[in-house]
Image (cartoon, rainbow, N blue to C red; front, top):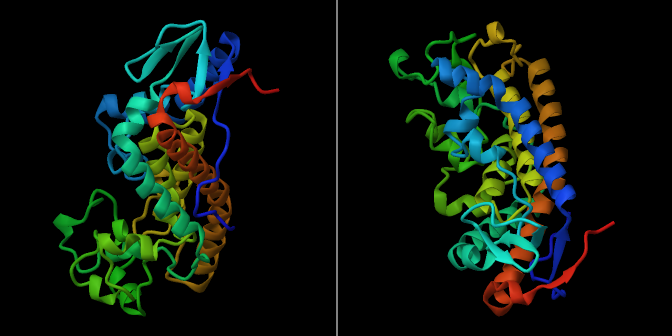
Length: 312
Protein backbone atom coordinates (compact mmCIF):
# COMPACT_ATOMS: atom_id res chain seq x y z
CA UNK A 1 0.00 0.00 0.00
CA UNK A 2 1.38 3.39 -1.01
CA UNK A 3 0.63 6.23 1.39
CA UNK A 4 1.23 9.79 0.17
CA UNK A 5 3.81 11.63 2.21
CA UNK A 6 2.60 15.09 1.24
CA UNK A 7 -0.80 16.45 2.12
CA UNK A 8 -3.26 16.99 -0.75
CA UNK A 9 -5.02 20.33 -1.02
CA UNK A 10 -8.78 19.97 -0.71
CA UNK A 11 -11.81 22.09 -0.04
CA UNK A 12 -12.46 21.53 3.64
CA UNK A 13 -16.13 21.07 4.39
CA UNK A 14 -18.18 20.50 7.48
CA UNK A 15 -20.80 17.77 7.42
CA UNK A 16 -24.07 18.39 9.24
CA UNK A 17 -25.61 15.34 10.89
CA UNK A 18 -29.32 15.50 11.52
CA UNK A 19 -30.32 14.88 15.13
CA UNK A 20 -31.85 11.46 14.46
CA UNK A 21 -28.71 10.35 12.56
CA UNK A 22 -26.12 11.32 15.15
CA UNK A 23 -28.23 10.01 18.01
CA UNK A 24 -28.58 6.66 16.24
CA UNK A 25 -24.82 6.49 15.69
CA UNK A 26 -24.17 7.40 19.31
CA UNK A 27 -26.55 4.70 20.57
CA UNK A 28 -25.05 2.07 18.25
CA UNK A 29 -21.55 2.90 19.45
CA UNK A 30 -22.50 2.79 23.12
CA UNK A 31 -24.22 -0.57 22.69
CA UNK A 32 -21.22 -1.97 20.82
CA UNK A 33 -18.77 -0.92 23.50
CA UNK A 34 -21.06 -2.15 26.29
CA UNK A 35 -21.10 -5.63 24.72
CA UNK A 36 -17.31 -5.69 24.53
CA UNK A 37 -16.42 -4.39 27.98
CA UNK A 38 -19.29 -5.60 30.20
CA UNK A 39 -17.39 -8.61 31.58
CA UNK A 40 -14.27 -6.55 32.22
CA UNK A 41 -16.24 -3.87 34.07
CA UNK A 42 -17.95 -6.54 36.21
CA UNK A 43 -14.60 -8.16 37.06
CA UNK A 44 -13.06 -4.82 37.92
CA UNK A 45 -15.89 -4.04 40.32
CA UNK A 46 -15.40 -7.45 41.92
CA UNK A 47 -11.62 -6.98 42.14
CA UNK A 48 -10.93 -9.96 39.85
CA UNK A 49 -7.89 -9.74 37.57
CA UNK A 50 -7.71 -11.16 34.06
CA UNK A 51 -4.27 -11.79 32.49
CA UNK A 52 -5.49 -11.22 28.93
CA UNK A 53 -8.19 -8.55 28.88
CA UNK A 54 -6.86 -6.26 31.64
CA UNK A 55 -3.92 -5.37 29.38
CA UNK A 56 -6.32 -3.47 27.11
CA UNK A 57 -7.16 -1.12 29.99
CA UNK A 58 -3.87 -0.96 31.90
CA UNK A 59 -1.12 -0.90 29.29
CA UNK A 60 -3.50 1.11 27.13
CA UNK A 61 -4.82 4.02 29.15
CA UNK A 62 -8.24 4.48 27.57
CA UNK A 63 -10.82 3.62 30.21
CA UNK A 64 -14.14 1.92 29.34
CA UNK A 65 -16.13 5.09 30.00
CA UNK A 66 -14.00 7.13 27.62
CA UNK A 67 -14.12 4.40 24.98
CA UNK A 68 -17.92 4.36 25.30
CA UNK A 69 -18.33 8.09 24.75
CA UNK A 70 -19.21 8.79 21.13
CA UNK A 71 -17.69 11.59 19.03
CA UNK A 72 -18.34 12.29 15.34
CA UNK A 73 -14.81 13.60 14.73
CA UNK A 74 -13.59 16.99 13.62
CA UNK A 75 -15.56 18.94 11.05
CA UNK A 76 -18.97 17.43 11.85
CA UNK A 77 -21.88 19.54 13.07
CA UNK A 78 -24.32 17.84 15.40
CA UNK A 79 -27.64 19.44 14.58
CA UNK A 80 -30.05 20.77 17.19
CA UNK A 81 -27.96 20.36 20.31
CA UNK A 82 -25.91 22.33 22.78
CA UNK A 83 -22.22 21.43 23.13
CA UNK A 84 -22.29 17.98 24.79
CA UNK A 85 -18.96 18.41 26.54
CA UNK A 86 -15.96 20.68 27.06
CA UNK A 87 -14.37 19.53 23.80
CA UNK A 88 -17.22 21.08 21.80
CA UNK A 89 -18.22 24.56 20.71
CA UNK A 90 -21.59 25.97 19.70
CA UNK A 91 -22.08 26.75 16.01
CA UNK A 92 -25.18 27.95 14.19
CA UNK A 93 -27.80 25.22 14.43
CA UNK A 94 -25.86 22.88 16.68
CA UNK A 95 -22.43 22.02 18.04
CA UNK A 96 -19.16 20.57 16.82
CA UNK A 97 -15.84 19.38 18.20
CA UNK A 98 -13.60 22.35 19.01
CA UNK A 99 -10.94 21.25 16.56
CA UNK A 100 -9.32 24.68 16.59
CA UNK A 101 -8.52 24.46 20.29
CA UNK A 102 -7.57 20.79 20.20
CA UNK A 103 -5.38 21.07 17.12
CA UNK A 104 -3.49 24.00 18.62
CA UNK A 105 -2.38 21.64 21.40
CA UNK A 106 -2.06 18.39 19.48
CA UNK A 107 -0.63 19.27 16.09
CA UNK A 108 2.80 17.92 16.95
CA UNK A 109 1.34 14.68 18.30
CA UNK A 110 -0.72 14.18 15.15
CA UNK A 111 2.37 14.69 13.02
CA UNK A 112 4.34 12.12 15.03
CA UNK A 113 1.52 9.57 14.85
CA UNK A 114 1.27 10.06 11.09
CA UNK A 115 5.02 9.66 10.64
CA UNK A 116 4.99 6.32 12.46
CA UNK A 117 1.88 5.03 10.66
CA UNK A 118 3.22 5.97 7.22
CA UNK A 119 6.62 4.41 7.91
CA UNK A 120 4.99 1.20 9.14
CA UNK A 121 2.59 0.99 6.19
CA UNK A 122 5.46 1.46 3.75
CA UNK A 123 7.33 -1.68 4.83
CA UNK A 124 6.70 -5.33 4.04
CA UNK A 125 5.42 -7.38 6.95
CA UNK A 126 7.81 -9.69 8.77
CA UNK A 127 6.36 -12.95 10.03
CA UNK A 128 9.24 -14.80 11.64
CA UNK A 129 9.08 -13.66 15.28
CA UNK A 130 6.61 -16.41 16.35
CA UNK A 131 5.37 -14.31 19.25
CA UNK A 132 8.43 -15.02 21.37
CA UNK A 133 8.36 -11.59 23.05
CA UNK A 134 6.24 -13.05 25.88
CA UNK A 135 8.80 -15.82 26.29
CA UNK A 136 11.59 -13.24 26.45
CA UNK A 137 9.70 -11.43 29.22
CA UNK A 138 9.96 -14.46 31.53
CA UNK A 139 13.34 -15.79 30.41
CA UNK A 140 15.49 -16.44 33.51
CA UNK A 141 13.05 -14.34 35.52
CA UNK A 142 12.78 -15.14 39.25
CA UNK A 143 9.35 -16.72 39.86
CA UNK A 144 8.26 -13.94 42.18
CA UNK A 145 8.89 -11.35 39.44
CA UNK A 146 6.95 -13.04 36.64
CA UNK A 147 4.13 -10.70 35.60
CA UNK A 148 1.34 -13.30 35.49
CA UNK A 149 2.74 -15.56 38.20
CA UNK A 150 -0.76 -16.59 39.28
CA UNK A 151 -0.85 -18.68 36.10
CA UNK A 152 1.44 -21.66 35.42
CA UNK A 153 3.93 -21.81 32.60
CA UNK A 154 3.29 -24.54 30.02
CA UNK A 155 6.99 -25.26 29.58
CA UNK A 156 10.41 -23.94 30.44
CA UNK A 157 10.96 -20.83 28.26
CA UNK A 158 14.74 -21.20 28.39
CA UNK A 159 15.29 -23.71 25.57
CA UNK A 160 12.77 -21.91 23.33
CA UNK A 161 14.44 -18.51 23.75
CA UNK A 162 17.91 -20.02 23.38
CA UNK A 163 17.07 -22.01 20.23
CA UNK A 164 17.69 -19.06 17.95
CA UNK A 165 17.76 -15.28 17.67
CA UNK A 166 14.71 -13.32 18.78
CA UNK A 167 13.25 -11.19 15.99
CA UNK A 168 11.23 -8.55 17.82
CA UNK A 169 10.84 -5.22 15.98
CA UNK A 170 8.60 -3.44 18.50
CA UNK A 171 10.31 -1.33 21.13
CA UNK A 172 7.39 -1.40 23.57
CA UNK A 173 7.63 -5.19 23.65
CA UNK A 174 11.42 -5.28 23.69
CA UNK A 175 11.65 -2.95 26.68
CA UNK A 176 9.91 -5.59 28.82
CA UNK A 177 12.41 -8.33 27.92
CA UNK A 178 14.43 -9.61 30.83
CA UNK A 179 18.03 -8.43 30.93
CA UNK A 180 19.40 -11.82 29.78
CA UNK A 181 16.93 -11.90 26.86
CA UNK A 182 17.67 -8.50 25.35
CA UNK A 183 21.08 -9.36 23.82
CA UNK A 184 19.41 -12.32 22.10
CA UNK A 185 17.28 -10.03 19.95
CA UNK A 186 18.50 -9.41 16.40
CA UNK A 187 18.44 -5.65 17.05
CA UNK A 188 18.82 -3.66 20.26
CA UNK A 189 15.76 -1.43 19.98
CA UNK A 190 15.39 2.08 21.38
CA UNK A 191 12.54 4.55 21.43
CA UNK A 192 14.46 6.77 19.01
CA UNK A 193 14.54 3.92 16.48
CA UNK A 194 10.81 3.17 16.63
CA UNK A 195 9.94 4.77 13.29
CA UNK A 196 12.82 2.90 11.65
CA UNK A 197 11.74 -0.59 12.77
CA UNK A 198 7.95 -0.76 13.13
CA UNK A 199 6.48 -3.09 10.51
CA UNK A 200 2.94 -4.23 9.67
CA UNK A 201 3.35 -7.91 10.52
CA UNK A 202 3.96 -7.15 14.20
CA UNK A 203 1.10 -8.02 16.55
CA UNK A 204 1.92 -5.14 18.88
CA UNK A 205 2.24 -2.58 16.09
CA UNK A 206 -1.24 -3.60 14.97
CA UNK A 207 -2.63 -3.54 18.51
CA UNK A 208 -1.18 -0.05 18.86
CA UNK A 209 -3.52 1.24 16.16
CA UNK A 210 -5.97 1.41 19.04
CA UNK A 211 -3.57 3.65 20.97
CA UNK A 212 -3.16 6.05 18.05
CA UNK A 213 -6.93 6.11 17.46
CA UNK A 214 -7.84 7.04 21.02
CA UNK A 215 -4.99 9.55 21.23
CA UNK A 216 -6.58 11.28 18.23
CA UNK A 217 -10.02 11.27 19.88
CA UNK A 218 -12.32 13.25 19.86
CA UNK A 219 -10.92 14.52 16.55
CA UNK A 220 -11.63 11.19 14.81
CA UNK A 221 -14.91 9.26 14.68
CA UNK A 222 -15.47 6.96 17.62
CA UNK A 223 -16.43 4.15 15.24
CA UNK A 224 -12.80 4.12 14.06
CA UNK A 225 -11.57 3.95 17.65
CA UNK A 226 -13.91 1.01 18.31
CA UNK A 227 -12.78 -0.77 15.14
CA UNK A 228 -9.17 -0.51 16.32
CA UNK A 229 -10.17 -1.65 19.80
CA UNK A 230 -11.83 -4.79 18.43
CA UNK A 231 -8.70 -5.60 16.45
CA UNK A 232 -6.55 -5.09 19.56
CA UNK A 233 -8.93 -7.31 21.54
CA UNK A 234 -8.56 -10.19 19.07
CA UNK A 235 -4.80 -9.78 18.75
CA UNK A 236 -4.33 -9.77 22.52
CA UNK A 237 -6.01 -13.16 22.76
CA UNK A 238 -3.62 -14.69 20.22
CA UNK A 239 -0.69 -12.86 21.81
CA UNK A 240 -1.33 -14.70 25.08
CA UNK A 241 -2.29 -18.01 23.46
CA UNK A 242 1.21 -18.02 21.96
CA UNK A 243 2.81 -17.15 25.29
CA UNK A 244 4.41 -19.68 27.65
CA UNK A 245 1.50 -19.29 30.10
CA UNK A 246 -1.16 -21.97 30.40
CA UNK A 247 -4.43 -20.04 30.21
CA UNK A 248 -6.60 -22.95 29.06
CA UNK A 249 -8.69 -22.66 32.24
CA UNK A 250 -9.85 -19.28 30.93
CA UNK A 251 -10.70 -20.70 27.49
CA UNK A 252 -7.47 -19.68 25.74
CA UNK A 253 -6.11 -22.82 24.15
CA UNK A 254 -2.33 -22.63 23.65
CA UNK A 255 -0.73 -21.98 20.29
CA UNK A 256 2.46 -24.00 20.92
CA UNK A 257 5.01 -21.86 19.12
CA UNK A 258 7.73 -24.12 20.49
CA UNK A 259 6.63 -26.62 17.79
CA UNK A 260 6.60 -26.38 13.97
CA UNK A 261 2.82 -26.76 13.87
CA UNK A 262 2.34 -24.04 16.47
CA UNK A 263 4.63 -21.68 14.59
CA UNK A 264 2.72 -22.26 11.37
CA UNK A 265 -0.57 -21.53 13.15
CA UNK A 266 0.80 -18.38 14.75
CA UNK A 267 2.12 -17.11 11.41
CA UNK A 268 -1.27 -17.74 9.79
CA UNK A 269 -3.00 -15.69 12.50
CA UNK A 270 -0.33 -13.00 12.26
CA UNK A 271 -0.93 -12.60 8.53
CA UNK A 272 -4.69 -12.38 9.07
CA UNK A 273 -4.21 -9.60 11.61
CA UNK A 274 -1.88 -7.74 9.24
CA UNK A 275 -4.59 -7.88 6.57
CA UNK A 276 -7.18 -6.55 9.02
CA UNK A 277 -4.87 -3.81 10.27
CA UNK A 278 -3.90 -2.41 6.86
CA UNK A 279 -7.19 -0.61 6.10
CA UNK A 280 -7.42 0.69 9.67
CA UNK A 281 -3.89 2.09 9.41
CA UNK A 282 -4.83 3.75 6.11
CA UNK A 283 -7.95 5.28 7.68
CA UNK A 284 -5.90 6.67 10.55
CA UNK A 285 -3.37 8.17 8.13
CA UNK A 286 -6.21 9.76 6.17
CA UNK A 287 -7.60 11.24 9.40
CA UNK A 288 -4.18 12.61 10.33
CA UNK A 289 -3.90 14.20 6.89
CA UNK A 290 -7.32 15.82 7.27
CA UNK A 291 -6.54 17.10 10.74
CA UNK A 292 -3.24 18.58 9.66
CA UNK A 293 -5.04 20.33 6.81
CA UNK A 294 -7.52 21.77 9.28
CA UNK A 295 -4.67 22.91 11.50
CA UNK A 296 -3.09 24.71 8.56
CA UNK A 297 -6.32 26.36 7.36
CA UNK A 298 -6.92 29.61 9.22
CA UNK A 299 -5.37 28.14 12.33
CA UNK A 300 -7.91 25.32 12.33
CA UNK A 301 -10.85 27.66 12.81
CA UNK A 302 -14.37 26.36 12.09
CA UNK A 303 -14.58 29.32 9.68
CA UNK A 304 -12.22 27.36 7.39
CA UNK A 305 -15.03 24.88 6.76
CA UNK A 306 -17.86 25.34 4.31
CA UNK A 307 -20.93 23.35 5.19
CA UNK A 308 -22.51 20.47 3.33
CA UNK A 309 -25.47 18.34 4.32
CA UNK A 310 -25.53 14.79 5.53
CA UNK A 311 -23.96 12.56 2.85
CA UNK A 312 -26.20 10.05 1.13
